[in-house]
Image (cartoon, one colour):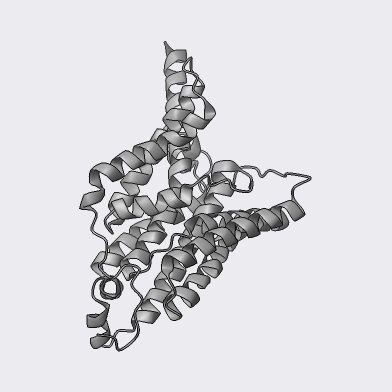
Length: 313
């Protein structure tokens, strides 16, 4: 009986850890997309930002042996690549969809090229990042490995998401950012700089996506492989839209995705043998169903994807 209980606890811990590892990259990317969308910029280049962030984090961690440097490098790489969206779509007012596709292609191509140049022969792997809390906290039943066994970046990511949600809806700068997506002409008339607000929102969102890619490579996978996101960036865009500008709902949807992914993976370890390709698309099918059911209720900013010139009325 005791052995059975221990096995049940171990399976529960493994399930929760797998769910969190799958949910966190999506949550970070979708949070970053929410920031950009609320300012009026739709960045569909998240796939490229995740990949470039993942590669940068992987390469820097291998070079320095420091996971924190890797996470910072991932966020910086995502922020830098999202600068293309700032220059081309916000400053030069080019089509945001076209620029986003270019960012996806650039991030995918650059990360694949650099990986093939430096790591294709050796295909190195990383160990697990150290947990923020050691024994005796990490040895507590269930809550120990699930909560106290997490790496420090897990708590940084949670804090980032919570602060973003509060900042967007409880502060004056957050109100101005949402005004840039709702009524940019009114914000301009009141002295707000729509271009600057949108630029900062896109860069911040890019950093969040890059951090999500770093989490995927360093924590969830322990390595980097070209194209490892498998459409996660596009899924993050859908999640951000379904979240209706509320980070709380974005978090719930991301956690649901993590649970579905963990469940599908667990089925492979049981007598229920499903094709690997089917398992990989199950979360996307569920999200598409949710989009069909709830997509009509999503409230996107009226000025989303609409370029703005200062002084425009």
